[in-house]
Image (cartoon, rainbow, N blue to C red; front, side, top):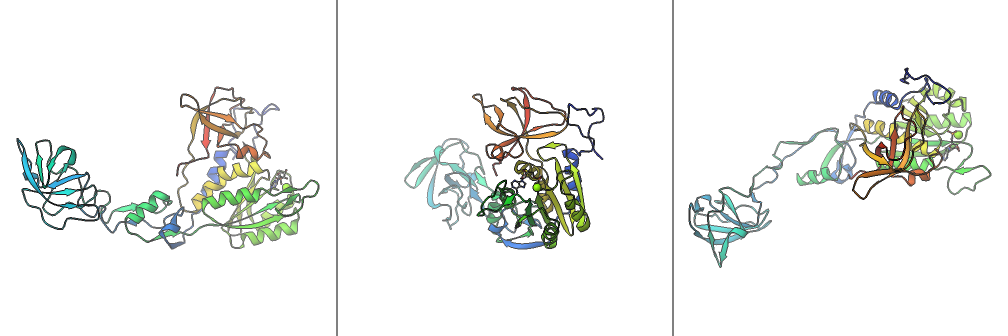
Length: 422
Ligand code: AMP
Ligand code: MG
């Protein structure tokens, strides 16, 4: 069902197309169709970066494993704290991080102690060194201290038996460190999806080949390589396939033979190369969609044998936009992680944004901060779907919804930043 607005009458002046899917509807249909991979494997900790946990991580140790000091100062017995006046204690040794004091402390004694060092047997209170008067092996203390202060308890960060990470979590650098802090050397992660891709088009040449008249270098296989590699999937680049029914059929068959996902670019425009549709309908169940978006209107999605299939448009910017808006969330879902929504922030546009109602637009833009520290955004010039430099110059998408028409400079717009901190 198209969710184009019924209250808006299509006219020559706008782009409302009752046969188009909305972006949201396309995303929902894809999400409803993708089943996460189940097979798991064990990998050494470092290899788990970017992977998704197949089972929870449970701590086998307490962190910290010993009662230790939160401050530099002196370890003492709380009963030595003077109710009034000043008391003198004898310093009998020191405890440094990694070099504990092995003796037992009794009332009247103190041990010099550093942050992170084990609190000696018998001690239960840390005195801040700034509040202590030290003379040789004697210290003088007054009433400014509290019993049992400045201690880090055993297991206060993580207790033995505690579940630290849950299945489905994607491993980032913080998790690598956390896992290492627990002494864990191997992790159970879900296997990587295998993604095969190829480009279609008689005009396409691969790098290293000379260009004839009207021919262009295939760039989509490079942007796809980059986006897929970053996601951490296994890739198979199957090259360029000519606009030829037999060659296409062979490519679809071999791509889907042992891939979980097949991605192609080009040849899905409405009315274009009907044999693509015909081949795909024979080999699988593929739907051709018009999505009410710009760039990236034509999109094919479905099953090709056992593989999921995404037929992306040919234009280089459309490939990137449809990948980020549809394929990446689907791949994350397949990888077993709950594909969280991209962050969206609001910023004032410094440039006028040309747009017609009837489709969602992902305009390429630069996000910056103005002299007051507020976010402002400006479009990166020509928004043609073949202008790949508009992606390279951009650091965000401005997302303009269906109903929006031309946007005046100074208006607030939704922005999806390309960057994330982790
Ligand atoms: P198509 O969807 O096949 O009609 O292609 C739309 C436009 O994108 C055409 O101008 C193609 O030449 C161009 N195009 C298609 N595939 C690629 C590719 N792999 N690399 C660069 N441009 C492409
Ligand atoms: Mg083509």
